[in-house]
Image (cartoon, rainbow over all chains, first blue to last red; front, side):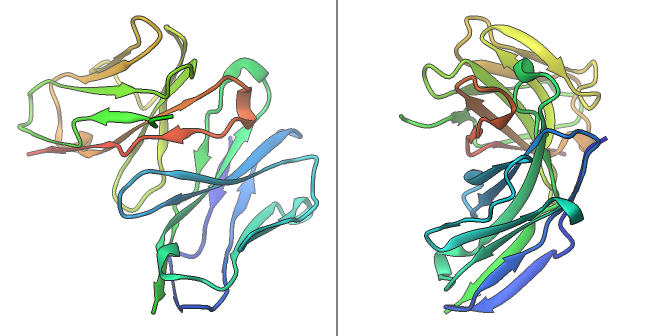
Length: 118
Length: 115
């Protein structure tokens, strides 16, 4: 069975500080996909980034970057130079690719609430 | 792209009543998903449609829950004989094919409170 764990329940930072969110996952599959979603107070989950299990190259996209390490089953996410608008709950999620036509059935972690103070 | 639309945004009902929620996905998205999110938790998968066919249902979806997508466009989720444990945010999402690597586009959700 799949499992996603986000050990940090809440992080509070001052604007312009960097924030790193931890995510650890469990899966028996060799092919899988990892996602980060943001849920602002409005409630709508917003897709941020995606990674497949074959690509461990870490990247930067604007103020977002991620560190995928298969050896430790971790997929950490960093917001650089945080802003007040980054305040939200962030979810890490996992989907398996056993059956390509199976759709994207995501297993979510419990979320980390990020509060960015001005 | 008008986004995924859900109606109503909030629903308060008494235990034992039936409720129905509606989801309008992004037009031309052939896949539609329902998730449930309780307070302080991540969303949990309930069910999934490809066009009008319901392809998978979670064990979380008891006999009191039924979902339909009659013409492969909008979807409804009905809960019969509601219980207090049904209180949660019900999220709808859609995607344009692509399988397990396709990002889901979520609506704002319907918050259900059962009193």
